Length: 324
Image 1: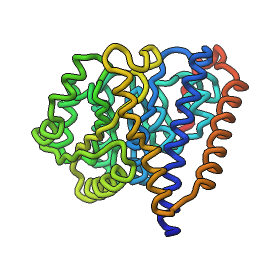
Image 2: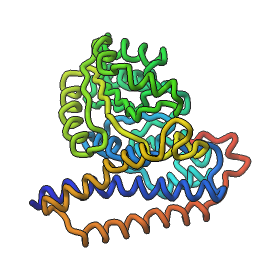
Image 3: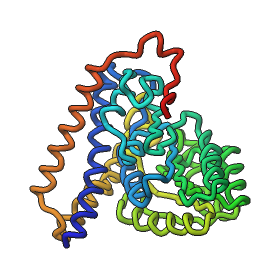
Image 4: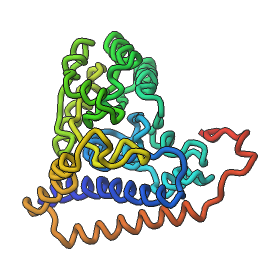
């Protein structure tokens, strides 16, 4: 029982950290503390946390513009992540990247990328470097269903399969792509698993609202890719509770409030919480203590960001990762 407790409560903690961090980010955006675009990960936490729970610290992770959750699940300092959202010099990228371009090279989190599908070839490049050096790391590449129709996605799938590269393509299928009816139709009526198999990859589908299902599948997939150096495609069926970005209303014109409320019944945090309580692996006291700790972590991240300086003019000529 203690083993289960150790395994499950940290998963809940990581998901709760992402949830609270994203909620606070939305609040700071509304107060004009964060500029530019802000794409929230609320509802999809089980995918990032479940996947990264199956990796080693020397594996590589790369993401799209909805990258806060992956970065935090990888273990990045919430203070530095929030400072980056604020555009401050103490941020992960010294205030030069912002929300869509988080990078934490020390943790092999190789960045979020704003161009839809544009980072898939980079994931293939990382996997090729591992293959070339005869390493045993794997690359986790996160992207949304809206990236799948792009040419670079299919080119990446082809090269990874042709060269037997250790990359796992993780499609977070939240049903709406870029938040348009056209993308929704494409997502609902295109069999992504068949597409992946047609490119010569092994492929599986998982309930992306169940962190334990994601973790268990990825534990098996990561082990297989690490051992045999072949690409894998995982489709995680998930749902974002918020709009596409802060520029998009929570429900927009493409889904109803009733649909979102129905989806919230499958909230990954609530599902794991029920599992922990039902199995006796944790108590309400544990949750209250954990949630207080996370609330303080998030508050501290905002204080840190607000008290940090903006980059000076000399930052225009500085290499963010000159020390790496």
